[in-house]
Amino acid sequence: MQGTKEKLSSQETHTPSDSIHASSMPRYMTLLFAVVCGMSVANIYFAQPLLDHLSREFGIDYSTIGILITITQIFYAVGLLLLVPLGDLLNQRRLIIGQMLLSVVALIIVGTASSSTVLFVGMASVGLLAVVTQTLVAFAATMAAPAERGRVVGMVTSGIVIGILLARSISGILTDLAGWRSVYLFSAALMLCMVCTLFRVLPNVEREVKTLSYAQLLSSVFMLFVQERVLRIRAILALLIFTAFSILWTSVVLPLSAPPLSLSHTAIGAFGLAGIVGALAAARAGKLADQGHGQRTTGIALLLLLISWWFISFTEQSLFALVIGIVLLDLAVQAVHVTNQSIILTLRMEARSRLTAGYMVFYSIGSATGSIASTQIYSHYGWNGVCWLGASVSAVAFLFWAVTLRATNAALQRRPAWK
Image (cartoon, rainbow, N blue to C red):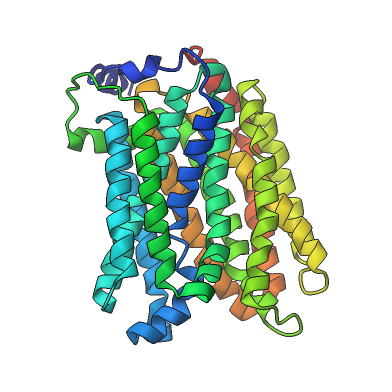
């Protein structure tokens, strides 16, 4: 295995971009990255509250329209594997701007779709190109100074979570004001503005010549899992925490919209604001990781994740308890996610995009698993069954962290300092 690792490393050349973080990354740049990431990832979640409108307009049966969300998520996972690793091979500035321009085109296709075929093709393209968020995360890690890298990754990742949580509310508001098509056309206009801004501010650093082909680049993503035990551990944690995250956010609309609560979609969407509070609070997790407290932060966050389900279980009796549970759950998930990324991005300086791609595939698997499992459990066992499922997944995550704690610490201590 060591010989394979040396062979992989010998095929790669450290890029000039590895040295562009000699000084601190400007705060406005970090915020810009966070905003762009939030906008990009929101594009794949806009459709969730619009399924009834799309079903009526395109004559798609209610039992079939949900496939639209599945297709978007599948192509997002494909993009993680096929596009994100290119950040280790190509000029990242051109890659980011090119993907965002194509995203603008895809959003316009969705917003002007005249048939269900065009709609499905457009949504698949939106999902595929939304992975620019992960290229941005890896680029932000490269631009940041070593002492602030965790903080920068934390802020940028917070933008992604906030984009996910706000997407449903924004989509509903714009649909009420100007119809569902306005959601995608408005997003296309904003994305084009962001392209112009990034074109002006992103550093243009050329890659040195590399001997890795595209096929070798993709295969090296899998090789990283073989070589890096910490990546395997943190990817499994990502799968578990985002399974718990998806269990809540996929199914919470069911008890809230049913009697005796019978809340409107606008009121239900407002609970996403509580999640934003947790996501913002967790941005500090990256700074704690910079200070060497990543493992402790992970353990505390996973314990909070487990506790959050106790509050969430009282949803049908107290909406205040639900709000507390949402804040705790989103705080915990975001804290672990930020810490995960801060840790794995130290493993290979020349492979940050591939590390991010491999890690995020497990995020997608967890999200899909949570969505499918939560609705099935709710239909058979109600809200209590969903809460027991979420608590069980959270408990498994905590136990897995505890069991692998010593192995992770040992692996990290053997590594040279992150330059």
